[in-house]
Each structure stands twice: as structure tokens, then as C-alpha cells.
Image 1 (cartoon, rainbow, N blue to C red):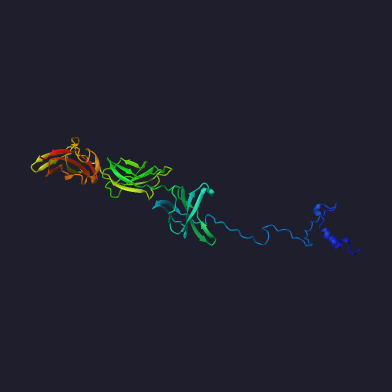
Image 2: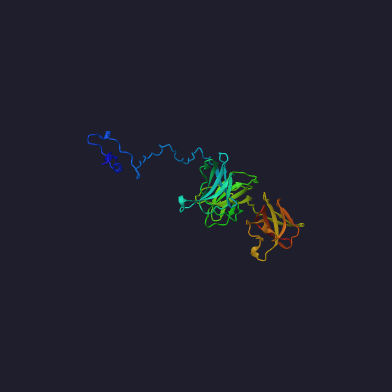
Length: 369
């Protein structure tokens, strides 16, 4: 047998490392030596694992998230105005020096992630941008983000956004005219958006002034009865939003201007008297208006005597429609004219004219023979 005994045998040593050790019956567990470190397949000790963060080796650095203090300040006072078929965006610059701005259009889309579809409109260092591609009839809004670049990368501010809005169809064929003492507005009806907003202001050339007024119109027609004679009004008309709000008028609103002209009073007391110098015509003057006298031959049908060629008394016509329809005797503001060439039976018709408004008076028949 070998001198060293079994404990010196390599085989025993190898097996001992695999045998669990228990304390002898006469020694308490606290005085029993701990089991040696585990050996690997080649018989070498395996060092115990080192707890993460306790060794000398440094862990890889994690990227540092920018704090609110690092982010640029957001732009302010973002506005959106429809202009020339596009949306003009304007904003006040960020107080952070060197900021540029990323502008996006966001469409409301329940089927898209987060209920929105976003499209970048570009990056600018200015404080305004045109969006010519905003679709009509779709709820949308715009967002602007300030950006700066530092050694850690590009930093973004919190976005500012416009209120949600929907571009509406334009109002076309807008016209304005006098109807009695009221202003009549008309436009081409829009089946998909019947209601319109009407904004009335005093034009710069108006001798009168006053507050801005708002009305609502439907069906392609509106009558503004609260008017002041002599005032020059500017009317702006645009399709009303579905929310019924009185939003600011878009810059692309239809516009028309009109001077309010009071309806002239018709002449109902025209008299004709034969003199050596011709037929003298007299009537009561009409303040603020001129009276024209037209002469025509007496109609062949007896039932039409006294009506004149322009229609019944107190009927309003366009002043331009009178040209070439009868012989003009003359016009006067003093209530007197002379027809030097009366021939046979003549029908005289007085027309009261104030600017482009003309009101037919009562015609009289007179024989110059």
C-alpha cells in the first residue's frame, strides 16, 4: 500500500470534491468549515460570482434623458388663418436662442393609431408657414415644435397646437342690392353646408361708423333690414362650422361692398299744362333725388292710358334699364320742366332717381294740340 494512504490518492481527492460534507456528530455545525469552492471539470476552483455593481469594472453608461430644464421653450400664440385656399400658420418665436420649428398637420382618423394621422410639413427657422394641402371637410389641427441641437442630440419642446377645425366650401356668386330700405344679399346655395356666417362692418370710405355685426343666413339669401342710409357696408360671408361657433372670418371669405341708398319717393302729383313755349310740367320736389321726365306716345289700348312705358307707379327698376326706352324730356331737382316739342297726345312718366335706384311715378297723359 502506498505510504501516504488513501487521502494522498489523486482519485480520492477527485472524489472528495464531489462528496457533500456533513459535520461529525461531536461538532456543532457552526464550528464546521464551509464547503470549498466548486471545481470545474478540470479540477480547478470556480470563483464565486461577483454581484453586479460591486466589482471594479464600470457598467456601461445609460443614455441620460433630457430634463424639462434642458428642453427648449415651446413657441407661443399659434394661429391658423385660411388664405388663398391654403392655411397660413403664424406663431411667436421660442425664447430659447437658435430654435428651429417643425410643423405638422394632424388629421382626425379613428382607424389610425391614437386616432390621428400626422404629416410633417417641414422644418423652418421662421415664424410662419403655408399649408396648401389641407383637405376640406376633414377635422384637423396643426402642431409646431421648437427644436435645438446640443452635444447630446436634438431636443424638442412640447408641441403647441391650433384648435381643431374643418375647412369648409367657399361661398360663391355673392351679390348685394337694395330691397326697399334693406340690403339683400344672395349667394349660390351649398347643399352640403346650407348655413353661412355674415359679418357686416363699415367700410373705410363710409361717412358713418359703428360696431361690427354678425348674422346667420340660409338658403342662399339674407335680408339686412337694420341699415342706415348713406352708410357703406362691407359684407363678408363664409360657410358656418358644424359646431355652430362664431369663429373668426377666414381671409378667403366672399366679400361685397354696398352703399345704402334710401328708396326714393315716387312722384305721384305730376301736372302738365300747355303754354306758348311748350308743355310745362310741375311736381313736388323729392329731397336727395333727381326726377327725370320721359315722354311716349299714348298707347293704342285705352286700358293702358296713364301707366307709362315702365310699369305701374311705385315700382322700382334699375336706373340703367331706362336708357333708350322713351324720349327723355329732361331732369330736375326743382320740380319743374318744359317740353318744347309736344306732338299730339303724350304720356309723361316721372322717374325718381337716387344713385342707381329708380322708382316709377304716376304717369299723366296730355294733348299738346
